[in-house]
Length: 348
Length: 237
Ligand SMILES: Nc1ncnc2c1ncn2[C@@H]1O[C@H](COP(=O)(O)OP(=O)(O)O)[C@@H](O)[C@H]1O
Ligand SMILES: [Mg+2]
View 1 (cartoon, helix red, strand yellow):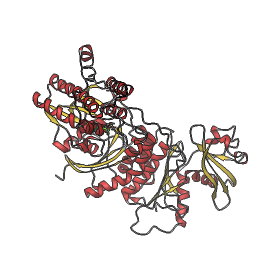
View 2 (tube, helix red, strand yellow):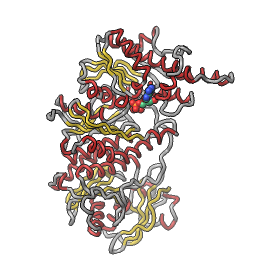
View 3 (cartoon, rainbow over the protein chains, first blue to last red):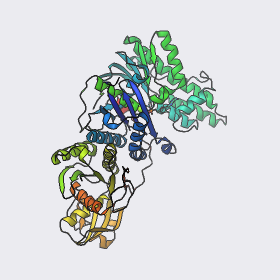
View 4 (cartoon, rainbow over the protein chains, first blue to last red):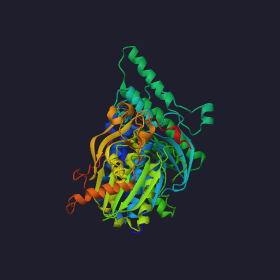
């Protein structure tokens, strides 16, 4: 137990300041400070507001994580940090802080990919990742299907969204329905009272030549527009909008496409483990439908608990611990941030 | 005593070590865009130059700006984190004061304007009087177009990159141009010599006082409130 690597992970790619500590495959603590409320009135994350909040929260969050885990910084084996993708100014705060820890404590540093971390976090929840694993990442900034032979250095992109990310679609549709930001959880809640076959919203890239050419890609902007138009038509006719039905039908269109393509990818690549990560993986209907379809296909479904699906430091620590355990070389202390780091690049 | 000084408020990513009597190491990289890349290696290199281990450091001082936000935060979070990791006191100093102090160290006396690059066609500015004992800030810091500063201020000798960028408005450019970690360390060591020792058990002195400014960045501008562009497409592999 104690010879397993003890790694502290820092995540500041968007609006959460996350610090987690992992020993091997065991989560010791996951501490998150969020500036989401400061952004709500703007209807989206304001980069400078997020960066300022990271600076204020950084050291207190590290301090809290160490205190709650009963870990002394000098006992760490390595520091891991999200070096991309994400908001440039936000990433810089976490990376600079991680480097300061590395210099002060004389520890190795691993700059890691935020998306690979969303996958790796499930190791501390459900144990080692079967190799290969199929991973679907669905969040506010990303929607990708990944084939993962080795989470520490081999992540392959099968497809991604052509326009809006899944979470972004939830957030935009929520705005159309007059629900607060971030909209995903509100739509999830509203949809529980609604009829998911009330309105037949379009499923992007699922038929004919679209499916051929964009087999594992997604498109949600047409869906978003269809919802907006549907609501607008009701408004114009002076009729009330059945929010629960719209939410449920929209949500069904999203999770239908996501799960269909994920299982198609499992089948065609002969992979029998599907992992879903990212903020949208918290969606209750996505979980239920994925469970149902995986069962039918003989695929084992893994979804981390909701708190580990949204951005956090534990996921970064989890990936860092894998890097150390597999003997991967640390990153250079001069490692840059990369706001558009490709998903296939696991380490900076 | 071994004081680590860090400043990233200007084009210089600069760090220095001061042992109580002199600057024993200084590492500076000029790069307006890559503060986080150069700073930590710079700190490590400065420690190597001084033949010191991180655990030999006793005090940390960071320049709190004003300066372009993104770079400025790199220095401040580095100083705060380094100090936290080793249980050291960390203090802040207005970065413009370090430029005035360096001019003073170089023998300049009289009135001085310090004007650094605030981007968006503006400067961060403060005025000082340099007498035989010290450089004392009289006004500022503030952010302004160089041309909008008072005429008598514009006519002063002006240190900082602002004078190079806006020579039309600030004709009397003088050295230094960017903050040097050595000057910041020297200023901090002088003020520290006058300050009472931090009481036992206080690991982080974030309160301003005794010539120090606290650890909050001097942004001097509100954030622009436009939501982030979606990062979706940029990450397609
Ligand atoms: N229950 C839910 N149903 C659908 N979407 C959700 C749910 N919970 C969170 N989300 C969405 O997840 C996104 C945030 O996830 P996160 O992984 O933090 O994203 P990112 O880091 O890309 O912004 C938001 O778009 C939010 O609306
Ligand atoms: Mg995320």
